[in-house]
Image (tube, rainbow, N blue to C red; front, top):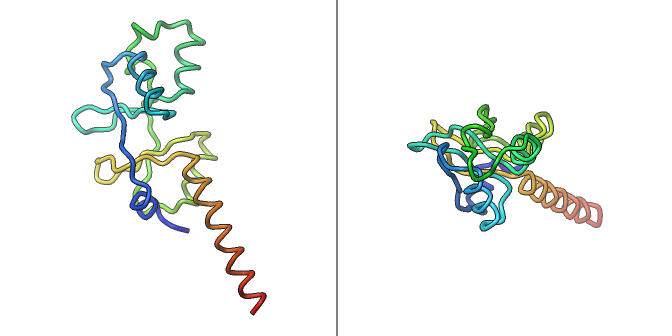
Amino acid sequence: MITVEQFLQFNSRSIFSLKPENKVIDSLFLMAEKNIGCILIMSHGQLLGIFSERDYARKVVLKGKNSNETLLSEVMTHKVITIEPHTGMDKCMQIMTDHHIRHLPVVQENKVLGLISIGDVVKEMIQQQKTLIEELQKYISG
């Protein structure tokens, strides 16, 4: 199984972030524009939290808060589970499953290097299974 670092080398994307003082509506516009499910909340290069569609549904909509007035710092997930670049994609799947989360920021020495989604992990695991099946078929057919 490949590591997160290897995955990011071949699948690099932009990291989208906002500041804690931004409003929830800012994150909704950005997530819609970029077709993404979460935003990292950062200040001065430091990861402070994460705000996802799930956070919006549970902490804003269900609590009757106004997206135009509510600050991200009020509703973001403060305790962010992160991974390091050497983490295997299979370990990412385990972490996501255990914690019921869909996104893992990749952090090394307090610097955000990327973001892995559940879709990334599933896609990679399917590719690995396909490769293994092909190798086994070649071995069996001699």
